[in-house]
Image (cartoon, one colour):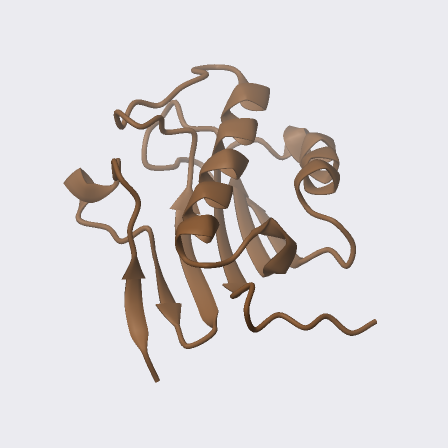
Length: 135
């Protein structure tokens, strides 16, 4: 089975010695995405909505680099600093994903990589070439 690292340029994760993700056969395993811009700076300090949208945008960018898309995400894990944002996550899932929606685990955590980070999203997806959705 072929295994390849998913790379984006610029890669804000490089200083942390992390891979954006891996393509293993027809599956993609994506590292947790946060509200980091191309320069590695966290955006939207104190603004959950800005951070959440940027995290989803970063997820989409890495998926595309790996040969997939948001429509082929089968599992996400979403880490929140405040479960009070749960209803916003439900709305964001509707905005960024379409039915059938991915399996999901949502957890509240006391801290993420930065004390100012409010959300992190990791995912497992199928490549666009291999995806064949059945109802």
